Length: 181
View 1 (tube, helix red, strand yellow):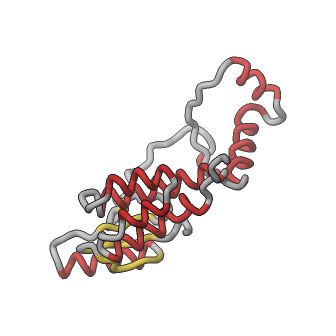
View 2 (cartoon, one colour):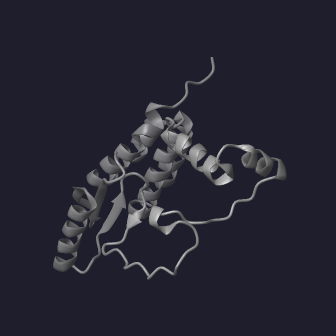
View 3 (cartoon, rainbow, N blue to C red):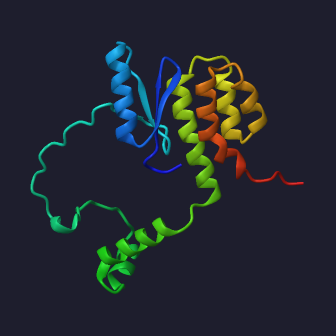
């Protein structure tokens, strides 16, 4: 799954999947034909996306280096952390940027990938199947890493919803740690 993948559901059926513009266009067409608003989900996070993105408010002049897209924020560190940052080449800001860039490029830890997949699937379950039979047990199995129970609990769900949730949840099970012997 990429960050640019989205999926739309209308009346419990998948109506589109792909880039945001195409999925929103399909969702708006479904809305025009029916007064029930489709739901568009981010495949990465499981978050519901607005059908029409809100217009951004005019930005107030900000401090920092706006041409570079730099925005000043506040961070809370212990004095020894500030001392260490100040001693680094380029100062605290440059060091923090280098550390963040290095962490963003580093491979995601398996536990973080499992948790991200479980959180995305759980968000979709809550929106589409929260009152479906076995939903609570499916969520418990999802976070416990029990793929067998998860599949069993999602069997009675509408086919498109079950398939989508299983696809989002798959990384939560494929990288599950083995139990100690």
